[in-house]
Length: 315
Ligand SMILES: [Zn+2]
Image (cartoon, rainbow, N blue to C red; front, side, top):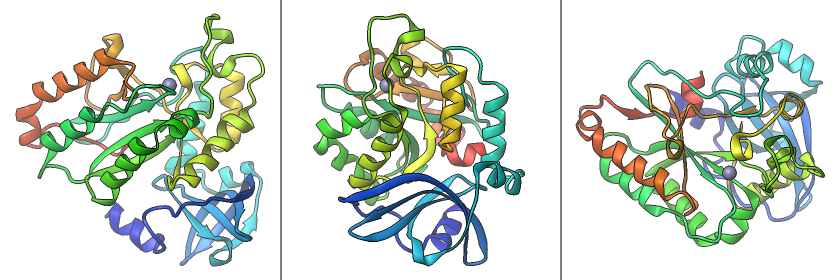
């Protein structure tokens, strides 16, 4: 049903074209009407003198790019958009985060319970000199072949990872086009700064952090590389404070935490948002994930343990 909906709503393409010369990229809220449906326009930009919008369906978190001329627009403030779409999954998620945005670590949504048994897999690609841990993905195909195809998962990309790993990124994209993976692309900041200071001054809380650069430049880089940014954001190190969460929400983004960071020995439960790093720097997490797949082998075969699409879990 969801898949059908996406195809009808966004007949242009299910894969982003590459936008190489993006100008005037900005947060720009409007209510967009397309084919009788109301959507949220949340970014606008031009590429080669053509204007585009990044659209969000607040019912199901799907995002896509359309030429600006294809929709009719009513310019809005975010507060008005939030009022109009108050009963949608997206605004409910934003309000849930706003109510709970305390603490330095793991703020945001860290658990999403679908009706069946399984997990939401999120793989972080922080800056790294090492190659992608392709074994994570090849193991998924092996175990989920004929069970779930494409395999849904979320990948959080940092700009500095994208810049250094063209081949690995292209490999992931071919797995999308060959319908083996259904990837939700999550913004993981452009620089992904990390230092030796306490958490309160580390990652995005480091002095001198420019959120426009960390958020919007990374979205532009994603678009340039043919990735459609989702409305989700993963804080580097899962570190944030109340102020930065409020700022993130103003960009229309929803922070995604994790209740099962495998390398930290956290327990996996049904509906867990599982976190592993696929950037070559977290061998233990990758091994633990392969072990988890082996443990669930029989359940996977019997469709008693599935991977969920984060967007659908949050509906
Ligand atoms: Zn990271």
